[in-house]
Amino acid sequence: MLRLAILTTLLGAAGASPAVGEDEVKRPQPQEQSGQVEKSPEPDEQTSSWEFQFAGHGGAAGLVSRGEVRLAIASSLSPVDETVGYSRERSWGAGLRVMRGRWGVEVQHHRVASRGFTPAAMMRETRWFGAQDLPLTASADDLLSVFAVREFPLARGQATVHLAAGGGYLLMGGDSGRLVLEDLPPGISQMATFGGTSHEAVIEMTEGDFRADRGVAVLGGSVGLTLRMGRMFLRPRLDAFVGGARSTEESWGMHLHIAEVQDEVAATMTLNTTMRPRLFLFSVEVGWSSRP
Image 1 (cartoon, rainbow, N blue to C red):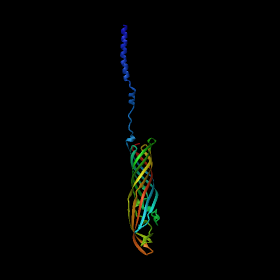
Image 2 (cartoon, rainbow, N blue to C red):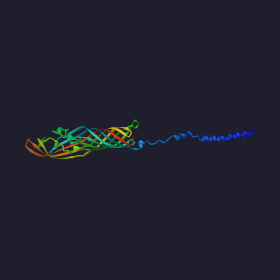
Image 3 (tube, rainbow, N blue to C red):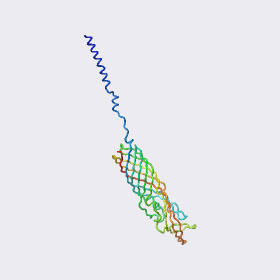
Image 4 (cartoon, rainbow, N blue to C red):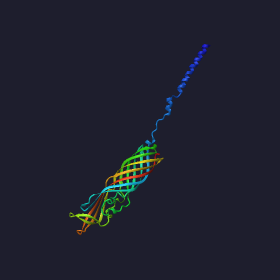
């Protein structure tokens, strides 16, 4: 009987031990638990999606016009006058910026109130008699630009700084195609050379013709700060553009009245100008973004 009790006790212990082992297998291991908690990193939406920014802007423009003016009467050429004109005007416009990640492309239209990029404005910078009295009528130029843009985030994405570079086209408008010399006072006096001798001649205009380059290509750059408020944004910025040479030619038939010889001579007067524009545009954009 004693042997039977001992044998029963041993068999009971042997039957219980596999159950304990099964419980140990069923328990989740630390590695399995950590694997269930960890998640694969999700892609950054702001670097993988497209963003469209629409904005309107207004501000001030600083304009610089550098060039040369030359007047020819018959076969007599005057010295070349180098001119530099400065003016401060208003500017306004609109633009679209398309971004993917931190890189993008921007297209903008600027309307610049300008009277400085005209032959008449260049003539006013010379020392010729009556040139300072030439009228300058109100006009405006159109600038279309395309920039490659790089943004640098600040303040946890609530603000960004951008740098941009590109080019465009400056289209001259307003009175840039008007005849200049028709606004000179009548009876203008000039020194003319005839037969190797200089004489003071009184000039009377008869009929004029005008030819001009309509516009010039420009190179430019931009820097600005974008402040985000949800989908709305505010962006103060500075844009600078350097343009190529724009040429004009104005030809007039005229009569020269030379008092010393009491004679009248028919001749042609030609005004040639070459102007290279510089634009510095400070503006503030207010816009809407497709991505907050």
